[in-house]
Length: 400
Image (cartoon, rainbow, N blue to C red; front, top):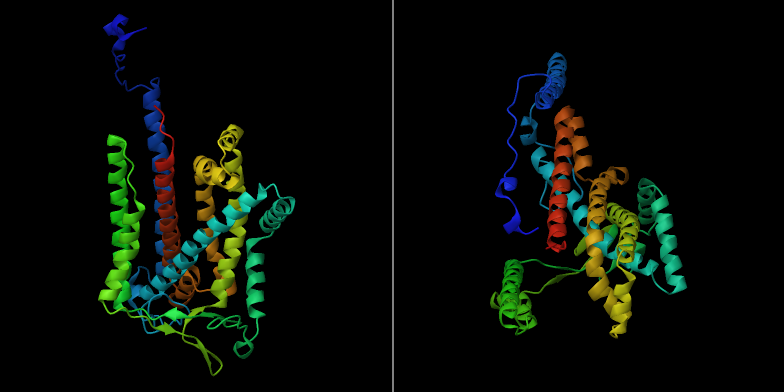
């Protein structure tokens, strides 16, 4: 029925019934029950809080977060930012947060790459590749993560000492003290070049948006890669050259009983990262495999009828459609990897859980310490969820 034949009276919304203060009105009953539930929850929270405060006062245990500004006296072997035992508990906990983020961010990237490769390999027409990938997934997913972390840590401790370290190439050393790699001595010119790269990336993105808008208007395609090379590569190189082009490599060398110089990766960090990546990749592989299988077989057949190769079909047609199925469960795996990093305390890696536990043992303020741990993981998890939800909404199909 067209709009012209519809009676205007039927377009009006039905009038709302006035709210009557009667138990027979379901809206009044709904409001009353909601108030009762909120009051009960508020009463339970107040009772728990008052009981906790009373018990702390009786035992003369200090409360509050004033301890954060006291000297920690806590040694931390691995830290992203400069740290000394004479620093405050606040800085020690900040180091713990950064150590946790170092594991979570690198682990998410590596687990995504490995899981995608294994998931695609499971669908391979090659019998051997498919069975090896399937065996990996079944074994990794069936073993407890803590057991895998202990296994990798034992492997790291079983490597030879520094004097007998594996030396596969110049500047590369593998021992039970960790891994050593050559490192670039960072200077101000490198920071400026990195900032120029970020600026160039943003400018390239803006140029790509303008180019696509103009293409939609006049139908003329415009090349983006020349501008991308000039802005993302050319601009940082120009800034680096203009500031003197410093390029000094710090090579590791054996001095005494350990290595000095270069970039070090501790055995605790390596064991934790390998364990988390291999474990989470097993679950990501199944997510990727399910996402690819969700794409209609007709998409493969149509692409192959056009003469596209199998790899091109997967990369250009199937995976972009499978992402809409992959992203939601992938978010759960990212969150699991981040939260599972708290098992680092079992192999001696000093993340936020390890440092906070030591802090509350020294200060006796367990409630504040546990609250800090919960707040850190809640913040990281919500940040990951918000970003993945934004990306999921961005790639979602928009129905007309």
